[in-house]
Image 1: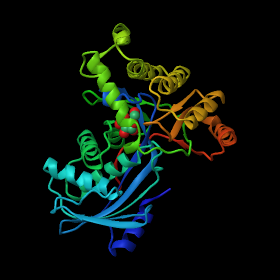
Image 2 (image 1 turned 90 degrees about the vertical axis):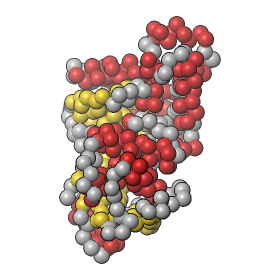
Image 3 (image 1 turned 45 degrees about the horizontal axis):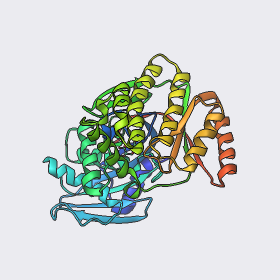
Image 4 (image 1 turned 90 degrees about the horizontal axis):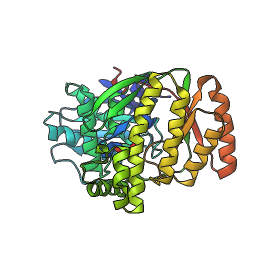
Length: 379
Ligand code: GLA
């Protein structure tokens, strides 16, 4: 795990001076509410104790010079030349945030930046949102811009949509900016009304990385978005969020098979999020687990975003006596989560590791996680 002292040293090595500010922003899991955010729906993510850490100092010119520890390279751009052509590199997340800040009218100047990440890349744990929110936290701190989580999350989403070119929803940036330790975030993506829901320390959140990967920009993610929009249009509503299960049942016969499935997933998933919040409030992990299992089934059969590895992992976990397990994030590869009685987490991890490796020939990476605060300034 990374820490402040190490970041200070690294920054000193690369820039021959001390950093002024150190920040970090977390990755996330989503307990439930998948592919609902861009349908104006409900989500229940949790920020996890895996961060992008960043050290920085202001510069008197307009250059941003950034060094990535994980990629072992350095890149830069000038804020004056309206930032560079798209390179497809990690620097675009930083440039995208800088660009969103400028568009928003925030007065920023140059900065020297060093960063390193603990969020596995491309695993569905939102390493990109963590980098965006760490950058936003850094620029806010260096240039005295008041930190307001939802505003920063929107700037992050804008950077990702318009700059990086991924048409994501708002969930990942919101949880990386607004997470709270020992809580999951119940978020209504229609109006960004949020509620922190206490999450019991007796339940471990186990992240099960299948070691299969997807690339969001090349995946079917955008196709799913379009299908959802088309379903809403055919049902004559602005978004699928507007429909209850009963209303959708009534409209369903007018839709193609595929659109029926896509709509059914989103609408039933919104309902499951409400029930999951209720299960947490009434301290009912068994109910919560059942909802996770149902969510996985719906994502597998109706939304069709699970590869074989995700299905194998989820089913094995479910059979090993956890409360519930499902894929998390966009899908098409990446991670599952399982909710496990904390005292049994270690032995659960061992068993699932062994069974998954045996069944697939892949080596999974498994992390026992807990919920943490969103983006924060450490020094
Ligand atoms: C990705 C996107 C999110 C959300 C999830 C699916 O993580 O970035 O906005 O759509 O997929 O729930």
